[in-house]
Length: 232
Image (cartoon, rainbow, N blue to C red):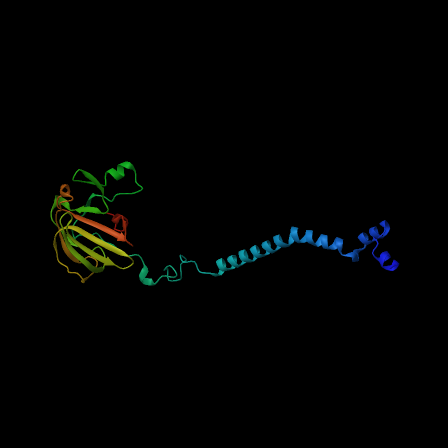
C-alpha cells in the first residue's frame, strides 16, 4: 500500500525541472515541430507547386506553336493554304471607272464621318452597311463579281431592288443590290470579274439614282468594302 502511494506522488521541483530539460521527454520537440509545420510547411508546398506550374507553362510557351505564327510557306500555321485572304476587285465591268457616291458607316468614326454615311428614308436615318458605286454620268453599267464564289441567292426586294448574293471562301459573303437585271442563277459558280448583272435603282436609295449597292460580310459581320478593294 505504501509503495503504491509513493509511486503516485508528484515529482519534486528538481525532478520536474529535469524532466522539462530532458530532450527525451518529448514535450518541447513536439511543440517546436507544430510551430515549424504551421509557419513553413504549407507555404513551402504552395511555392513549390507554383514554381512547377510556372515552369511547365514556360516550357510549353517555348516549345509550342502559336496559332498566329508563320511557317516557311508564309501561311499562318494551323490554317490550310486555302485560308489566305481573298482577292477583291471593283465589281464593275472592265473599262468602267467607278466612284463611291455613299460610303460605309464607320462605327468608330467621327460624328461627321458617321453623318455622311447615313441613308435618309421615310423620315428616318439608317447606317449605310455597304458602299454605293456609280460611273461617270450616272449611267447604267455592268456589274461583275468582286471575287470568286457561289451564287446563293437571287431575290427581288421592294426596297433594295434586285439582289444577288455570292458566298465566297473564308467566310465572305458579297451582296450586290439595286440591280436592274441579273445574269446568274442560284447554285452557279462565278469567277472574279465575271458579269453577273446590271446596275439600277431602288426605293430605299432613290436619291442615289442609278448605282450599285455593294456589301461585304465576313463571318456574318459587315466590313468596309473599301478595305478589301484596290485603291482608286
